[in-house]
Image (tube, rainbow, N blue to C red):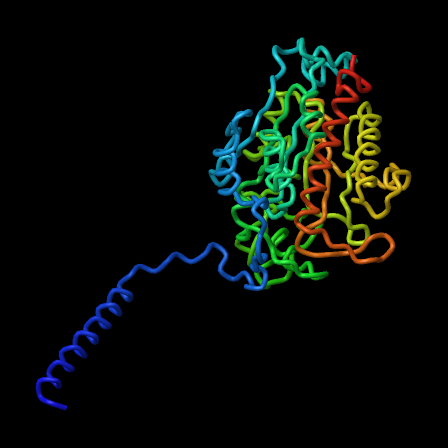
Length: 410
């Protein structure tokens, strides 16, 4: 190599070496990123679905962005702040009841006059739908976001029209939609949509109910025996509790309540809804289809619940969303599981609403029908189920007249 060429080569090599060292020094000097709050989650439990559909809006930020950009007919309101300081958003449509009654709900029950509690707008029909009291249960969030899309445009986010929902909503005076109640729990679960895992539901269980420090699943219903849950004893606390470790579904309703619970009770007292749908994910693996639960409630509402259960399960059977297509089988009241005392009971005795849990399957795994055949619910199918559930609940309220017509009304 010639001397001049050698000098040129040395200068280039020195520049490259110096540049590399500079990059190395800059990288070494860069501040370390803070570790994740729960760094020991097994990676296999964090797998995202491939090709998540656009209509699957399920994250806290995604829902906030959608509501901020898409709600024009309704009004978005922050109804409270979570234990972790996050806003809880609701969407309101129609006209609220005007004026107040002359007594409490308890007083009205004792006087056998619901009108004395509901006030001059007793005849109005008010509907409230809420989801994600358990932050890892995503299907209800997606369903309510798409319900808002239908209320705004007549179509879900796939572009599919739902004229039945539009017609039913037009017969209801006031609609309230709360897509994410437990925003802390939802923010804690770091997936938008879980990867499908066949019959293996361990990832879903882990993200929902969490695991102890040794990795052992906390599990359901065992998770309900630890309220508040001590996060320091967990590898991951799951999406069930808020940031105070409290499962809102089973809060201390007569004691110091969680802010999420108080927000729900305040909205219920202000709006005095007739019907509340509390959307969850979790149905029996031997009958893997949506199921309406019978709440622990005031006896006067039992006939109204019976009618709601029959209407919703008849519609789902006719739509192919049950184990059989026979409404006589699927709408049999004996199929309705009896819930224990929970937030639905508290809401009922707080404001008189018929408040019910509706459980749907998970997108993450499959199970069986009552005949033993495998059943998988795709994202599209789950959205259809969610919207049929909403449509039939609203139709039932519009047709039956709410507390003004239900037993104990007058």
